[in-house]
Image (cartoon, rainbow, N blue to C red; front, side, top):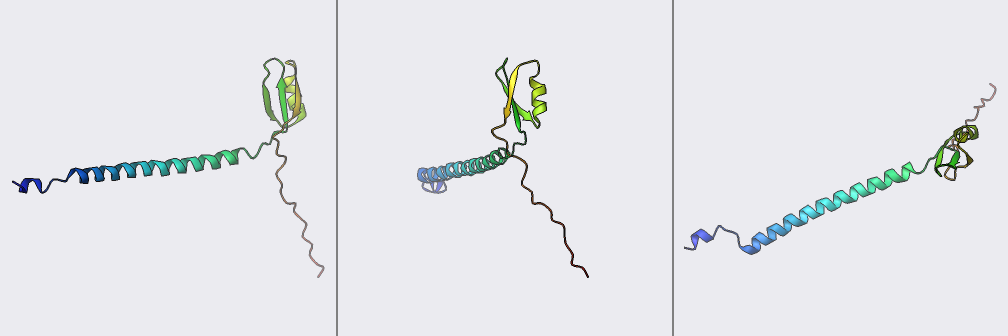
Length: 109
């Protein structure tokens, strides 16, 4: 009579196996969430760094703002006939700082 029950796992073994499966599942998704979060943070930080548009237009009619103008003249043309003001973009980063190239000076031979 005892032979048929010897191959069946006990309830404790079943519970331990199920807890292992649950922990693996939770750990897998926790690692995935961490990787996605750190990737999203990197993408958002690098995207917010550069803003090449120097001028913003604030429209009187809609109250909206458009900061997509490189020159003051472009901004004035956009608000022409609609009413509004042009002002400097507070998030303008300016031209990229690139080192100037120096002329190589070769000594006279």
